[in-house]
Image 1 (cartoon, helix red, strand yellow):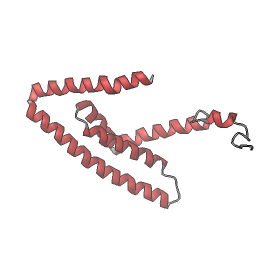
Image 2 (spheres, rainbow, N blue to C red):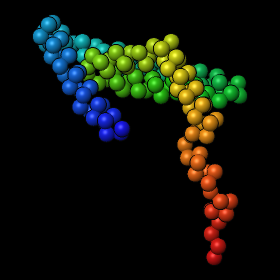
Image 3 (cartoon, rainbow, N blue to C red):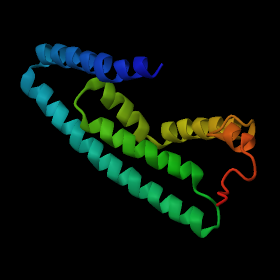
Image 4 (cartoon, helix red, strand yellow):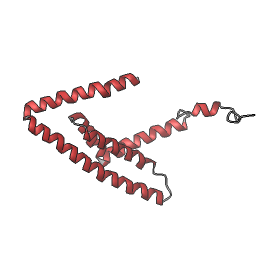
Length: 144
């Protein structure tokens, strides 16, 4: 499964991006295509900075109110990913990056991620949960 995912991320998506950029270049010319790539990179960096600062304020507010900023942390990671994806040239990645920077879409995805992890951890399918249960109490004691 990991191999297929890596193959998709490093071969299929870049190939599709190149094909789409070449088709766009033929359609509108190479200068406007290059200008579009630069424009989306600058716009993406600006939006990522703005959204990142907004989420940082939300995190600080949650912490001041004594609540864990779990959802805001997920959203912050999504903004970082969206900003990084927008800096890579391409049409598919730009669409994904802009989607991650739209607060409504990002909040919806973050809620789904949080529900998935909450469900995984409450049912005992979280990280290393079985190894904690199967350990004996004295496993970390070294007798000399």
